[in-house]
Length: 192
Image (cartoon, rainbow, N blue to C red; front, side, top):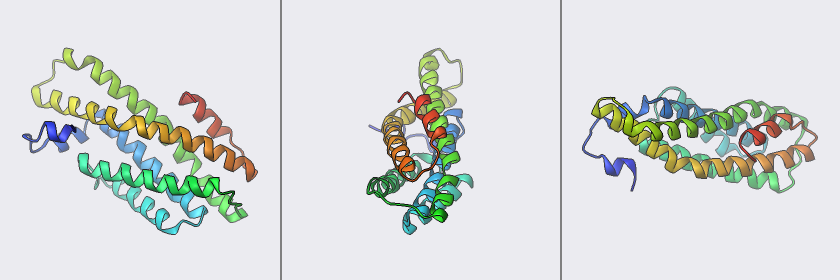
């Protein structure tokens, strides 16, 4: 049962929900993740995936992808793109210097996405913990509750994907003689 199904009677719930700090944090996570994927996919010769990731990042930044159904699509596309990136990295692909230069541009937004994902989960868990004690008005409380329910239902799979990708990427970058210090720190922050 998704949050939208549970609260279909509120026409503006998606709009209110997108303004919660938990959803703003999730949006930043997904934006930075898409930016990183655009660089990674381009470096690996995955042109369609690179374009989809770039378009997704631009739409997220412009606020065009909001609400549960749009975010579900973003998460699904991100998972699909990342699967193809991981497969290409695991195949033993050897990057040219130009590909390396492009790939490493994706590491900072990837690290930012990983850090903000952990922060998003913490924010949602905190919102859940104080939900019953909150003195906010009904619609604000409903939006906050809907946001944390949505986030806590989506992030475990996303976090597992980040952990798997970080491991795969570290192996791949090591094989291509690229420094992995940022990824090592991210893995530690994410509890790997």
